[in-house]
Length: 267
Image (cartoon, rainbow, N blue to C red; front, top):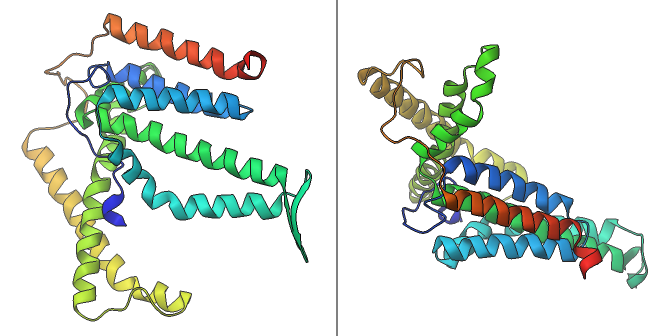
């Protein structure tokens, strides 16, 4: 299951989505998230899903990667669906048994929220799939640059955010190795009560914390050896520049936002 978590990974490519300005991609991702939350019906939600699936096709990233990123979320999706189905009592009853009542509104809300969560994960994953950590850092710093006027350490914040995102796959891989090593020593991580399973995680969490601090110290030492002193006086090999395709992407996204808001009236 841990190996299926792909958030934070970057897949190099030459698709039109890869070649978009990283600042524009961050803006488009934020707009897409608002698009999903502005949708108040399945029609509007369907417009958002079509938008992100179209972006995935243009990125030329295999759809199996999209499915792989969703696999770890299956328990969360099931839990969300169950809560909505059994705790929403408004609407017409569809199924009744003793104290359990399932309504059409509960089923509709469960499906709606599950589709929204899937769209959020796909859209946010696409940003990291098609944007390198360096480009992501530069884009975040440029977008937050107005905050420099009030003495906010924008570069340091962007660097920390990107490093944290970049090390998610590394920590997941390290966790998987530690779990395999503990299982080889006879550790039982899958059976027993909830309390016993929680206690069984201690031999995993302690080595993981030690390894994480060691990696952080090695990274800090490597940055100091390269004379890194923050964003002051720092130059960039590649400058961020917008191109006509970036403005086309903004216009297309604005069109999808319009369709999302007025989907009910247009349907």
